[in-house]
Image (tube, rainbow over all chains, first blue to last red; front, side, top):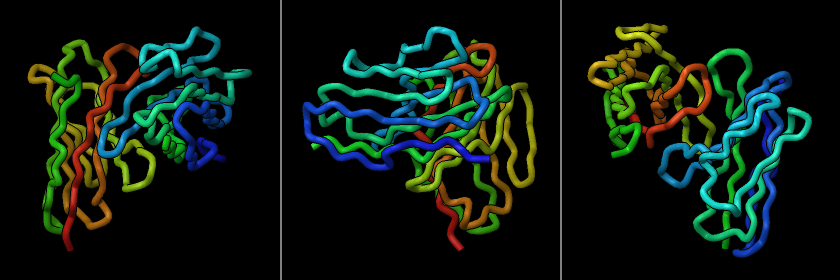
Length: 112
Length: 112
C-alpha cells in the first residue's frame, strides 16, 4: 500500500509569510507525528496525534506553530509569520498498532 | 546534557569490518530503544528495536542494551558501502510507543 506522503516536497517562502505543510498518513494508522530536522541535527519532536485524544503539543517551539488532524487522517502543520530559523525539513510519521513509525519524505522549508 | 547523545562521527570503517555505533540516554525511566537509518536526503527508516537488557540480533545487525549503564549500541557486521548513512538512536521514555526522543545521529562511512 501507499506510504506516508507529504506535500509540498519543497517550499520557499519569505520571512513573515504563513505556510501550510500537509501529511497523508498510511491508511488506518491512528498515530501521527510531526518532527523537524535542521541541517546536521537530529529529529526534533513537534506534535503527536493519537486517535481522538487531545494532541501532545509539547514540542511546538512557539505559538506560531500549530497543527490539526482532520477526520483522524490528514494532518496540516501551519507556521505563521515564518522566521529564517524555521528553515528545516519537516517530517511526518505515522504508526499503526506496532512500534514502527513510518516516515514520509519530508517537506524542505526555506525561509528567505 | 542532551537526553540522547551520540557521537556525530563520521565513523569510518573498511568494507567487511564491524561498525560499532553507540548511544547514551539520560532518563532511567526509558523503556524502548530504536535505531533508525537515514540516507542523505532521505527520511529515517527503522532497522532495530530493543526493549530488554542484552543483545538482539537481526541479520548483520545486533542491538545491545544496558539499562544500568544507560547505554545502547548497534553493531553492523560485514559492513558494506551501502551501509553508509546516518544512524539515529531514539528512546521512548514512557510505556507504549508515544513520543521518541532522537539523538543527533552518527554518520557511518564504509569504504570499499
